[in-house]
Image (spheres, helix red, strand yellow):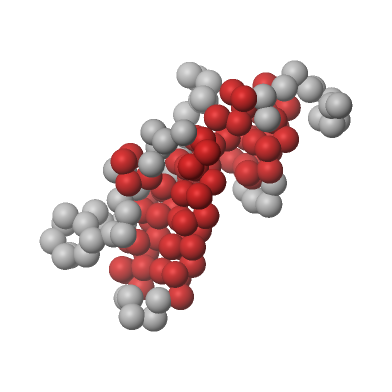
Length: 134
């Protein structure tokens, strides 16, 4: 959905060791495994997937039996899936013309990516003033 001249860079926990590097740690969900993220499912199942991923993230964060490294690895995969699921749901809602619904996915987030997606939804809606269209 990004413009071909837009480059995305990711900084932060993406440099964590992969589970096959000899640590013997297996993430709950590997963010690179598209089937684990359910990226090909119809939009009606994605809200359930998003909710489940958020519950899993909370569960890992509160799990006192995991080491810090284990938590980082688990959370890295879960957060990748959550981003993919939200992006897919956003795209599906835009295609259906549910621009307000698409914006609501990112309305509580305070990061640049969320702001860009919300702004882009107004462009897709051809609502350059940002006012609610009736």
